[in-house]
Image (cartoon, rainbow over all chains, first blue to last red; front, side, top):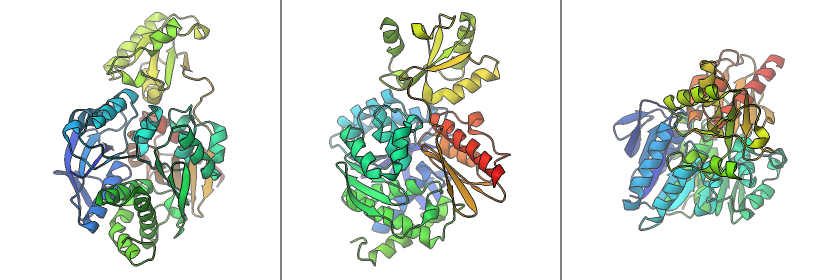
Length: 291
Length: 186
């Protein structure tokens, strides 16, 4: 197995689903279960499927817990990973929406350390929160925060973005300072992909590249536009791209897909996901595109 | 220090209370209320909450309080309010300087307004007040909250305080309440 994606979806009738993901006729399936292609883990998986189909890779494997906030589904995902990761062969592990639980997270980390080969570790959303709150941010290869979450990473006292102190929140207009602070305090992964009006790709606390073209302001309010970047990056890294290159392609493709969809702040994420293959194709024809 | 050690002790399954994860204390006026609240919360699935002694500086007439992970605050308080067992006070114990953000940023998109609090964003149609998008967050109830709120007007949509469970829901509630103020102005 190359790519494994894990997280929760908002359905309390599902305990746990593990299986191959595919998108068919605009619908997401994991194993035999149909999942709504909405913001969150589903959008991440949908975008990863689009990349896999485009580059001709095997479809991603997924571990999904049903959780509307009551915690059971999140625990099921943690426990599945704790139990099964040591015997799995995974090259890229993407971790997404989940209720933060430091103790269970740390057990997942222990299981990862027992794997024959440590996979590339990508964390976003709740998994990124708990990775930082646990003090093990540097165990990860890539975090993908938005500006509010970047301020949280830069705050060595905050255990959740809701507790980010005001003086750091006010620095959101100066992401370079927040990036440096998050990295120097050990609260960031080696690579960051900071998603915003301008996306920033960073390594070791320094900005490598800023991506602002095409500028599509309406992407920011659309739920799931960060999730699609995460899914695309996971798929591209699994295909063999280096993390910075994968981030550059994903951020650019997301903007192009938004442009193709003529998005407004009311657009829903499934429309953008359906245009990811066309956006990737468009990138092939640009000087900064995929090789 | 002894009390703090007691507070910080946790078993594997109650790991939400381990390490430095933010915790809170539910303060009651009498021990019976604490015991009843503990029973109700454990029956409701919050089996990792603990009855503990509050730190001396927080003793307000009771000798027991309930320790819980702050991230679960909304769901826990709502469960207690439903049975008229709301605590008389709620204390955050990790660092008193850390309080949930109440800072909101507002962005005008022409026909739409987006309000952001920390990591949560809510966007609504200026004319109709209909919620058109919710983005951000990382806890499991965010996609659920979005599915329950999008397409409804700010006046009719359920508050994340009522149907959410986590700190992301709490933060979305702050943005939601700010959005309602702007909907009245615009």
